[in-house]
Length: 196
Image 1 (cartoon, rainbow, N blue to C red):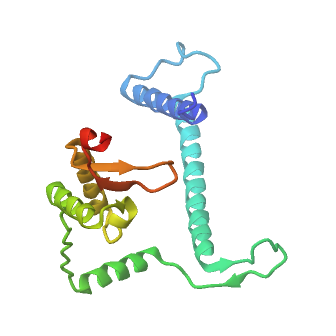
Image 2: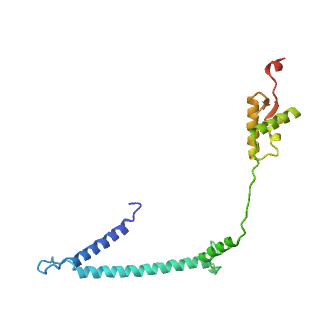
Image 3: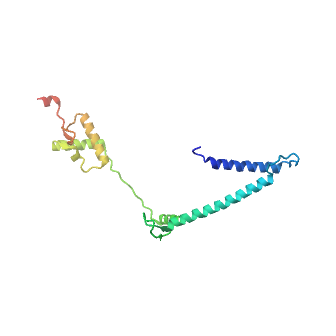
């Protein structure tokens, strides 16, 4: 019931039933007048009533289409200042969607084709492991943000994975006293040496 307009569907069914009734009357032989029920409309009267309704419907449909076309033209052609109902209606440019579409297609056809190649810098985790180990060995220690200073997103991810792998392999140590401080990378010192 929510998806279907019941009144429109009922109107359609009435018209369809009327057309079936008229078709059956035209195909079947006429009922003799002595057997015809009293007070019932004849097939000609029903047909005339249906014809009148269809003519009225076609007139309303034509007027509705004309009003819709005028409204679309007025929307594209006139405007009034927002919030001021007493302001005069002013004329502006007329928007013709077909012309705009043709202009866009023509512009696209005349545009020069551009060949673009995007070279993505590839980062190898093994290469980043060597890089991080070398920097920590040369400097003694380095903060993670300083290590990633000139890298893009892919480089930062590869460097972080390289650091995790170096820590897992006990080739690198880290320190971060508080969560707010940057991660500091240090050379790995074995436990027995560190204890002495």
